[in-house]
Image 1: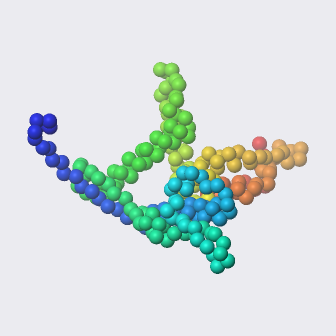
Image 2: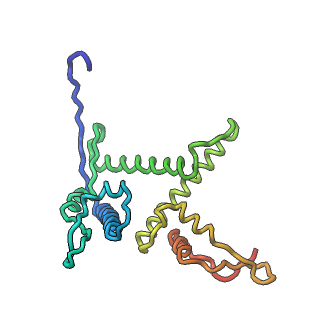
Image 3: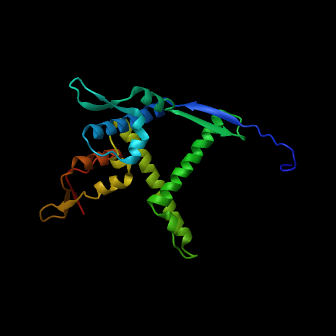
Length: 219
């Protein structure tokens, strides 16, 4: 028994994983942030304190051939920062198979992602309902969570396949852009036509694999 002088041993397995696609994505994001720091420093602009603290070891000040002070990439610092890109470690005392452990981890991550959507994006953390209506409200919130999660997955897949960007990496910003899509009545008929779309609006439709309606539509 613990606390009485005895020692309890637990067998723990540590599994190491490497993902090529994850490594490429992580390196791309890191280099974009480093280049942003360089852009600000060379323009004489203020760098956000948190951003500077994170990437200061990846840049250095030097002089160009004109003797002017410039900021450039620091290869040694960048190599150290990117050393473990695409790598992940899982530790468990329950699952003896590394493939099963990864499968369970991904399921857990999917649950956590869905909960974050439920809590933060559809405000499910503050659900007020009576005893007779809470099941209906819970169903609506759960349905909204599923739909939003599916839209996020679709948008990320489309962005990767067609080299698109999710504005601000946020579905809320996508919805806000699409909220600006308007229609107007065509003449004195019951037909309606979508007003000219901006480039951002067309790209947001493309994120969901949708083609905007062309021509006129009746009520």
